[in-house]
Length: 352
Image 1 (cartoon, one colour):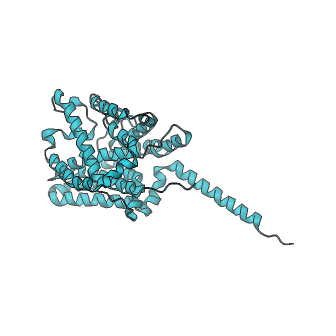
Image 2 (cartoon, helix red, strand yellow):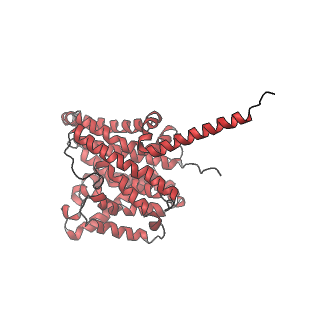
Image 3 (cartoon, one colour):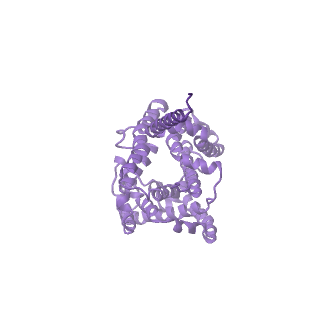
C-alpha cells in the first residue's frame, strides 16, 4: 500500500512558522532599536501557539508502540541530548555569554521546545482519548502559571498545553474551514488588530506572558487579574494563529513547500548563526543605525531560514539532527545494494 501523500499546506505552514521563529530570535540582537519590541510582541502573541497547535495536529498518530517510541528517541531525545550542550558551550565559550544552569535539566534558549514536545508526545495517547482533555488543559494552563521553575520548562509544558491538545482533536474537515472566503477576509483585520494590541502589550498584559515561561509571582499584575490576562493572551494567540494559517496557500509552492520538511534543521542550527552575529558585534551596528538594523536583521533571518532549509544545506546538516536514523538508513542502503548485487550475480548466465 502506497504511503499517503503529504499535505502541502502543512509544509507551507511549517515553513512560515519556523521562519518566524528565526526572525523572533534574531530580533534579540536588535532589542534596543526602534520598533523591535512591537515586532517581537506581535510575532510572539500568536506564532508560538500556532507552532504548538501544528505540533499537536501532526502528533495524532502517536502511540506507545515500539516504532513510534524509537522515532521519538531518534528525532527529539537524541537531538536534545546533543544540541543542548553544544549550544550552551558555544554561547559561553565562543560568544562570551554568561549562561548558567544545569545542562538538560534546565533547557537553554531554543532547546526548550525539544524537551517539551517530547513530554507532550509521551502523554499524547491519553490527551487524545477524550475531548474533555481540551477544557481540562485550559485549566491546567491557567494554574500552571503558579509554578516558577526552569526545570524541564514545566511552565511552558503546562501553559501551552491547550494549543497542543486542540491540535490533537481538530480534524482535517475542521481546518478546511480556514479556506472559507469569510475566514480569509476576517484574517487580515484580525492580524491588524493584534498588531495594534502589540503596541500596547505592557498596558493590557506583560511581554513575559507571551513566553509562557514566567511564574505569576514575577509578573507585575494583580493576582485577581493575572488569570484573566493569561486567558486573554491565550485567546489572542489562538485567533492570531488561525488567522495567519488561513492566509497560507493550500497548494504546493515548489521549493518553498519542500523546504517545509526541513524545519528541524532550521530550528537546531539557526541559534548558532544568530549568536555568531552577536559575537561579531551586530548589536553595535544596529544601535548606530536602528531602522536599517532592524530591517536588515529581519531580512537576514528570512535569508538564514531559506539557506538552512535549502536542499544542499539540508543534506549536509540533517545527519547531525538524527545521527542514528542517518546511520541506519546508510546501513539499509548498503544491504539493499549488496542484495541487489547478489541477485544480479545469481541470475547471470554461466558458460557451458
